[in-house]
Image 1: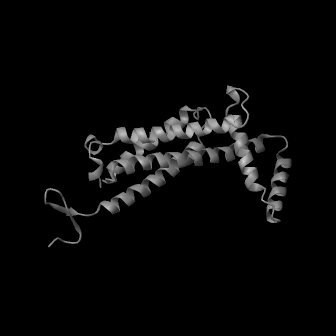
Image 2: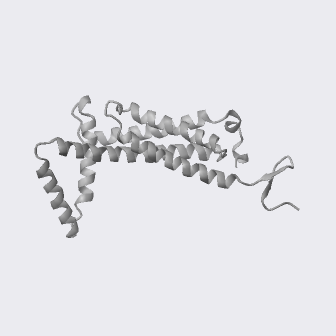
Image 3: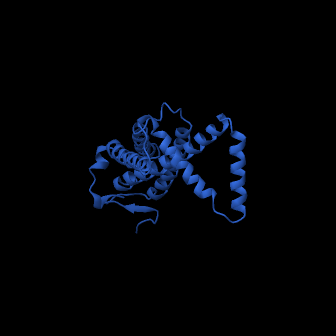
Length: 200
């Protein structure tokens, strides 16, 4: 009779079924690592955040890090799940990083401008309107983010909506693809060659 804490392998041997716990630990570590990377990317100098290239580099780092963490934690999440996790975390991390960068950019422009006091008063009025039941801040944040996307492309010309948004979406897709590709390439050869039906 098999012990309940052991899993029967194809060759008749048994081993402790600790796979699920290690995968959960690996996934948690990936989320924490990508969150830290996203925050660090938002505070990186603007000369490093090159348009197009930075998003691809972000995806490559996430894809490599996911595999590295799996190796360090001795987790075997499966090829498809690993690639999907790398792509998803890269997408979410880059969105969060861009959003935080736009907020920092807005704060910096307010502090460096001559009318910083007027800008703060406008923000205060918007906050009071929100408390009165008017849903302005959420629209204001989206508008400010769209302005940030337009400012990013100033060196490339005068791009008006929806082109800055389309370019940003293209960057997100490129980062996602880069993360998936890197995670698949960084995976051990024996893991890449495992048939889909036999993955854990």
